[in-house]
Image (cartoon, rainbow, N blue to C red; front, side, top):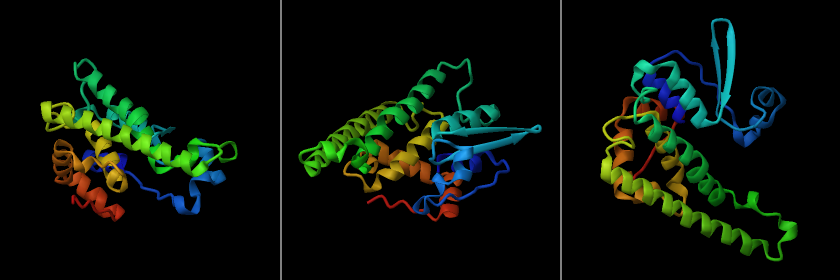
Amino acid sequence: MASHALFEALGVDYKLVEIDLSKGEQKTADYLAINPNGKVPTLVHRFQGQEQVVYESAAILLYLLDQYPESGLAPGMNSAKRGPYYQYLFWMSSTLQEAANRWAHPEFYIEATRCTNPEESLALIVEKARQELKRCWQMLDDGLAKQGPWLLGDDLTGADFHLFMIAYWSRRYASRAQDFPALKAHIKAMLELDSIQSMMRQEGLTFQLD
């Protein structure tokens, strides 16, 4: 989702290949030969007779924007903003998304055979994940309220695309990004971008801010 929108923002040629998770296509031998982690997305970059495979959304984002520094969607290597740019991307991947995963898939975090009360354990994991999501959203909301409109102030970057992706996922969470005022304003601003609108049309997505 974030990578797709960035391709639209960059205006470069690309081919989008849909992987149907409901059919387990991410676990087929052909896909695992490309991405042994068995998840989406995966970038296959062919250039100058070479082929480079990159997976993990944040890694793809970093790699992609480093190929097009003229886009201005990533701080320059010598920019003071490069540090916060890395910080937000790694923090969202390791902390915010981890909480989201625990909320959405608590069954991955327990061994039912070792639990005396699996349902109670699942409920506890979900509640702790909700609390962590709320904490993370509040941190982001405070930061945007202080220095917005974008995560790095006046500069729209790939980190904002990554945040939009997780905010979109959170529509069904017990703690949603859109329920925080500065985050809601950020989502609205992202939804006004041509690249986001194009990506969402192609993927058949909508984002209702109720």
